[in-house]
Length: 164
Image (tube, rainbow, N blue to C red; front, side, top):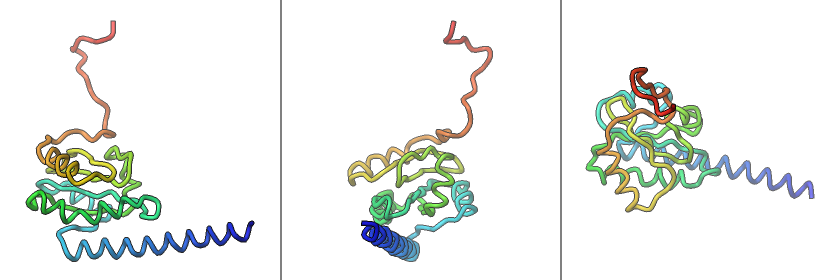
């Protein structure tokens, strides 16, 4: 029984490594064939602060979250859908985990939308194409706001309290 379990664990580790390598090749192909950039931490900050509309794919390990593959593959079509209005980027699973609280990410993969240095919103998980088209159009019209996890809402001391 122990030998079979060891073989299963070893197979899983090999499979995860193969998927990670293949996903890396997919990301490199997307970068080479489209306007999608692969960002490190400094690049993410610069991308967010750049003017105009941007979209960042927060990835997860493809063996743990296979939807990551699906969303990455459709990114070029998303860019076409928006008339190339969006700048697009992808960050690694490691950086995505580090930055998830900043953008209120609760589900993988996630598309984070930014504009002119500010936060617009998130589309999380995989969607069918019609849902993506609708939600992306909404993101392009939505005003910049506060990311869900940044700061504490401030109220005026002069405002009447809801509590009595």
